[in-house]
View 1 (tube, rainbow, N blue to C red):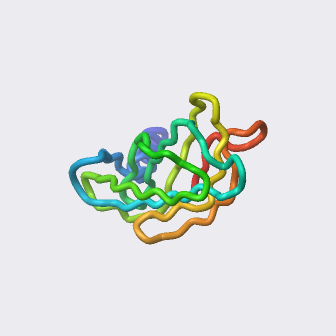
View 2: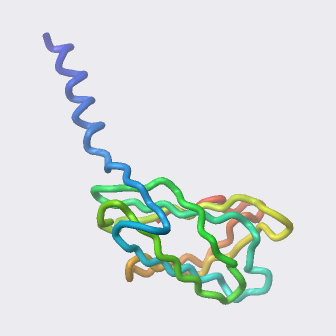
Length: 132
């Protein structure tokens, strides 16, 4: 009988993970993202950049950001989730594209919460993703 309790305990732990919800550019609860590219020379990028949100109750898949990511620019994105996010963190990912893939991110602000980054993505030995 003791061996039957183990699977029930494992199921309870799995249920504690946050629920996956959808994210889009057009409908739901508004989330404001400000991504600042560093002003250092060659900080801009042509890479494909995506972001996913992580909260205590909910998480999203990554969504591609439609931005220019030029050196010194702050770009604002409005993304919508099917349920309100409780802002625990994010995952920012990079995928090489075209001739200028490396990117230096200065900061990310999500729904008023500021995250200082000051890191390169896409250089040899650097990150392909940053999670906070």
